Length: 169
Ligand SMILES: [Fe+2]
Ligand SMILES: [Fe+2]
Image (cartoon, rainbow, N blue to C red; front, side, top):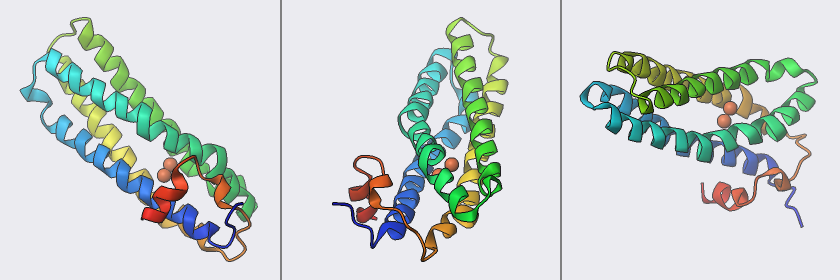
């Protein structure tokens, strides 16, 4: 049976827990972007593959959960779709920049010139900046909305396994 008494805290904790996990990936993205000039194209391609894997495995599911459940819930509670409009736009920009990095990796795999590396670095730093700003925007302006006492949902809203991770802090 669902636990309804601690639903706001559980959802809030889950979001913060996920953000802490995402920051590890964002930091790795930053480190790789700093080192782009030191790598040959094949080596860079391997690191880009790792970044793209992180996007598919960790980042995209987080975004999908927010868009399918968290944001609609916040929109419903505030009575306006404008509550999450900017955050949804952030997601679109994040996906666009991630798509550019995928295109970069495909180009490198096809033997793109070394001059392309500067472009790759721009896209990696661009994605880092988008993600850091977005995470801060959610934590400052969206997650606090979960503290409302009228919260009427249950921890069933969390993805499988999320309840345990949110409780773990
Ligand atoms: Fe988000
Ligand atoms: Fe988030």
